[in-house]
Amino acid sequence: MQSFPNAGGGAIVEAMAARIVENKAYLSEIDGKIGDGDHGVNMAKGFGMAAERLKDRDASLADAFALLGEVLMGEIGGSMGPLYGMTFTEFAEAIEGRDAIDAALFSTMLHKGLEGVQSIGSAKVGDKTLLDTFVPAVEAFDAANAEGKSFAEALDALVAAAEKGRDSTIDLVAKIGRASRLGERSRGVLDAGATSCAMILKSLADGAKARLA
Image (cartoon, rainbow, N blue to C red; front, side, top):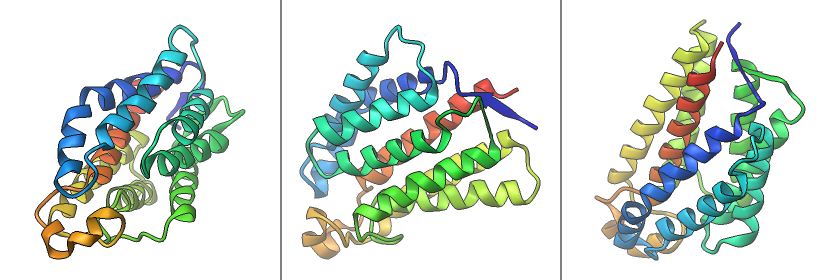
């Protein structure tokens, strides 16, 4: 049974943070087309602060998720802070105290994070939000597991579905948040939250795959 250790997994969160910081301008540019234009700035600020605090700590994945969740919920502005903050806090709780993370526990973690997001807002798939990335990604991971695929293959399925979900937001009309005021004019642009969510899930999957044993 493939799994990866919780210990030392903080490096996954540091790599995730580097990806978000690197894409700060891109995420804000997308957001600026139909939103406030601050998504990349806020995300880079929160993830960057968390990475700075994780540096040289050799944190477990659970501890790193908990710290990231805390920073995003308490120290950055915008609507995405609480949403992602809740996601990572729930991720942390799902794997806290566990030595190894196998596909079943990883699925539990994903579901808890997703439920955390859904408990805050009223968005659903099709509303042009991060859920258009997150929900199909989790469903694809579970489907791959149910089909008897390996943990690594299920992670590949997760990433492919996340990216497909992200791309689907181009053709959607925003139903939630500031962009919803634009109605039809919000069509034709990627959703910034769906885009950052795809980056986060890709970094998480890459980090997990690299540590599988």
